[in-house]
Length: 190
Image (cartoon, rainbow, N blue to C red; front, top):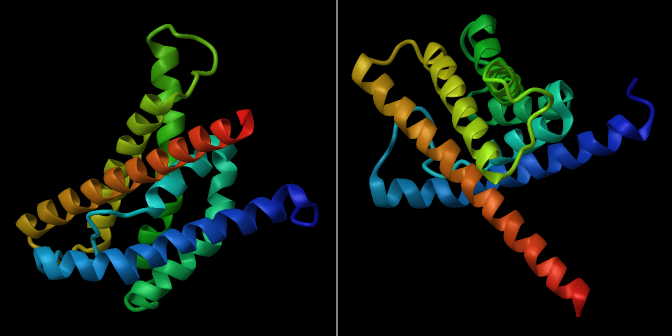
């Protein structure tokens, strides 16, 4: 299964993209955010770039995205919190991160079929953003289970911060990709 390049190359590319986005978020954006806005609970970044990678990988690879995202997700989880706490709590956090985007695409497809669109839905930029919002909400709800020691007000604040960070990070990644594709087309025509 993992011997041929149909698994190895995408896994390396996905892991690299996710880790670059993660470390840019936590080594550059996060310290800047804390200096400007103060500390937001539970490592929530207001511009979380890896969510854009999660959504795009799930779009192109479906449920295989869980396998492709697993190495980077495990490494980033370990970077943030080590393996403290119970193993089941760690599994909730890692599982939420891995499953939120593929699950959102599955739900989106089922909803599109339910309203009579039929067949596989086409995914334009707007659809990708809608699925990204769904994935962000699923992730935020599951991560609140992970941080069950927070008060209800802190949970609401953390959920809002997670959602804002995921959505803005996805938007920025998609905007940068769109500009890159536009620049590549211009370069190709020249």
